[in-house]
Amino acid sequence: MEEKKRAHLLVSGVVQGVYFRASTKNMAERLGLYGWVRNLPSGRVEVVFEGKSADVDRGIEWCGKGPEMSHVEGVEIHWEKPTEELESFELRF
Image: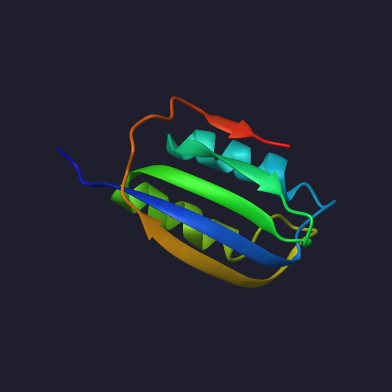
């Protein structure tokens, strides 16, 4: 069985109003990741990825670039214990 992990990200830069959330959801679903993404009042985007270790790493790498119209300045990563309570990847508000 492949190792699973969970990452909690805070993405800063020009990441709101540029389809960051929708693009993150599409990418996460393609990779088979579980979790969620939402905008924060601070202007950052908060993301939780849970899934196979290599796929979580790919998700984090993607968030470092973001969609075409975004300009990512930083990605803060907090590692958490996988909960396996998530069943999909969702947009949160």
